[in-house]
Amino acid sequence: MLILGFVTGCEPDKWLRRYREFTAHGGVEATGMDDPIAALIDGHLDVALARLPDARIDDTFHVITLYEEAPGIAVPKGSVYAEVGQTLRPGDVDDEIVNYRFAGDSGDASDSIAELRTALQVVAANVGIVLAPRPLLKVLSKKKVVHLGYRDPAAPSTTIAVVFPREKDSAAVQDFIGITKGRTANSSRQAAPKRTARQKAKAKQARRARNRRK
Image (tube, rainbow, N blue to C red; front, side, top):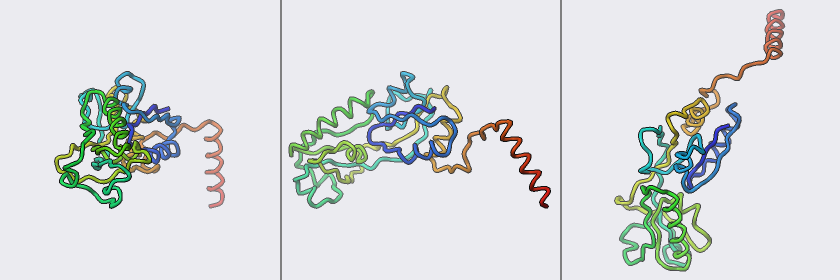
């Protein structure tokens, strides 16, 4: 059984489904959380899908980058921005109050997401905006908040990556990485499951039957 934590804003359902379907490691126990790196450091996880940068990740961890998150902006549902629904730029919102700007490199990711949740409540009250990775805004925005694209070269870059302790590297972890990278069942690195004596005997009988028919 692979124990995995995935950061808020990451939606790994497709990978989890393929892992359960195509591998024989006993499945995967996956939990969404604000700070999977803390759980990984505490030894509660085998592997994490985490948001980078994160100052706590050092050379004791393997890091496999998966994708870069698009920057986003959260605006009140009743605003003109939400009505138009287009990607915004810094000049479009110069006069707006920025309730929160996601940095993403703090020592405690759960603090950052907690502050973001609070700031989104202010946006829902029709006050100001929030700047954060759009996948994160998509998950956290409620009915009175709309998330839009945000185009700003100066916006901090965030990525989602597979992170795990070097000492916990295993066939199960490598197969999960392979699935996130698009490896198919036919190219799985895991060893073929051992056959029982009965299965071996049946296979031998089948080979003999095929040979007699030739």
